[in-house]
Image 1: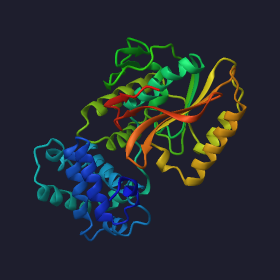
Image 2 (image 1 turned 135 degrees about the horizontal axis):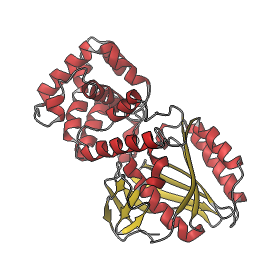
Image 3 (image 1 turned 180 degrees about the vertical axis):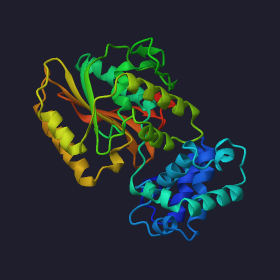
Length: 354
């Protein structure tokens, strides 16, 4: 199947197999085995199996296999059932054995697992902010160093704390040097511009925000982190500790309404207003995506050199299934600039320049 049609997969077993193969290619073989074992759930006499077999919509577009994987990981992390421990530890690698464990868990915890199908995964990865910071370094040369940042799909607001993180981006550094959160991805290509970045304000929204200071909500967020990703889990633990000291500025709001309010608010002269988001655009309804795009373009037409506007996105290119950093800014840049490609969880950034 051509890459552009991947999200159009309608067969549930095919979707599970593709998601498992994708995890394998992303160096997460342990999670891949658990996802692949979801095929065994389909053959059980459970409510979970019936909902999965009769899924209404595009399974991959809805991230259905990852919803189930999150529920299974939560059983382990919560200590409620640790039968997947040898699988997550990489000790059990036989797929038939993993299938049997997962099918048994589905039978025993049917009622516990079914609600995980009700919502898409909420992953909140601090590593993705490396691309956002690189974008700000690039924009600083175009529009000036001062920024007001606004994030949609912020989940737990981890990336709305990016002003408190230290970055080493191919030798170019930014942020407080003594920060507990150190974002140092493998950098490919030339470094981003060495420039000044001052974040004067930053806030975010989510339709279902996660409170990092609530242990139950924090554990649910951790369940969506793949068991293979020890560094991601460590970053999440660091973000949780930092939120306990000073929680992110995060509100419950529809993305479209948040953007509308953002654009209507007074803007300080000499500060670039920025909308940013990462790996969330696909989860928005089409009409919301269209409304946000229209609102940004209309506001861009009114932007001035004294009050610029910018849009930074780290999102999936639906034709190539690669994660690209794209930037639009006004006045002066009507077309999107794509200066980088990045690993979906921030492990590496490949700078193309612009």
